[in-house]
Amino acid sequence: MIRRLSLYEFFFQLCCFLLPGLAFLIGATALRVLALISPPGHGYLYVCGVLTLAWIACSVHFRVTSVEALFLKTDGVLSCLKALAWSYMFGFSALFFYRGATYSRLLLCASALILLSEVLVLRWLFRVLVRRAGVQRDRLRIIIVGADEFAQRTSERLKASAVAPCKTVAFVRVPGQQVTVTEDAPVLELDHLVRHNLKHFADDMVIAVSPEILPVISALVNQLKELAIPIRLILDFGMDLKLRDRLFLIGGTHMLDVQLAPSETIRYIVLKRCFDVAFSILAIILTGIPMLLIALAVKLSSPGPVFFVQKRVGINGQVFDMLKFRSMSVAPPEETDTVWTSGGSRCTLFGAFLRKSSLDELPQFFNVLRGDMSVVGPRPERPHFVEKFNDEIDAYNTRHHLKSGITGWAQVNGLRGDTDISKRVELDLYYIQHWSLTFDFRIILMTVISGFFTQNAY
Image (tube, one colour):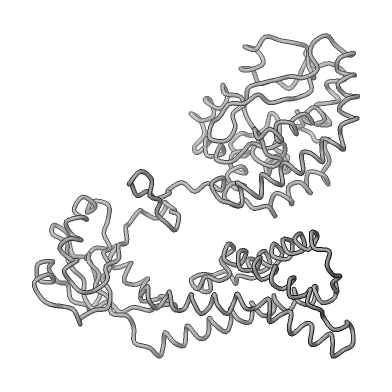
């Protein structure tokens, strides 16, 4: 099973990794024949090499080279486009530091289009070949250890596999397990399986057990490892539990992720942080003079400090000091930290303008630069209300799996200030489940287009 999948994966990846060089060759030949470019020099070898390395990294990251991903319900075009865009972005960034030659923009654009066409054709061709091989070759014979409903579902799914279609030749009842399988394959007792030499009876063995069998897994594997066939393990975690695709070994202990958090991915740790730093520096430079003027106006309009510093809860429940321009008269912390307020009589005249226009949020770019917040993410809440909402709203704390943001999916959908908390949490969770840099750009664009003046902007 694994051998066949590994073989498919190797050849598919090899073909995929060679595509950038082929795209440059086709593009250069076609444009040269049409007399649209001069003969390419040796500098293009450097370009092709850099883009190939970038393509290898990005295509693996976005699962373009995954054989299993070929047979998902999605067509994979979006993943191909992402890999292509990031590859050429990294490639062009590298070209910035290489001044040895000039390059034809027409050839670079043509190579990108050819590469996209190549990878889409390759994916289609490989999908056809794998399906045809699955029909023509004998199905993998498997023994499923387990005889309950989960074992039945496992058998049906492995039969329907496009990459390595299987045939269940026998089920094995675990001691104390009730037999509920409905297939024609025989149901054997565990002792019978171990006593007989079944070396040529099956190609693979799959242990498909429910959680109540976990205490005897170790003894079960020890009994089965005497058989000369590979043993796989499938666990029934239920329909609602989603897992990562790999195990972690920490301190000699194997762990599986059961709570998916984008903040643990390389894209979030590196790319989003780089974007946050670059964007916040640019925002501070562009709004530096307006912020100085706002600070002066706040100081002159009412007594008290320029900035309002308040404790907020961020990623993983960490508390940080969030900065805002002060828009209300000074009040004791027990009032500002535990009372939901939209300003009212405490709000100054200039402060009302700041809150309505969201200009009081500008200092939070320093929070982003410091790493407390992100440009885009769920809005941070005060510790008092976090405890309150966590008791009242299901999965409220899940919104703390990402950094808090200056703007967010809930905010661009009109949920700011004193609005429905449940609906806001629903949109925050949607953002966490679908996070990507593209989604962040979309939210920033929506924030700019909709403007800062919104009905609930406080």
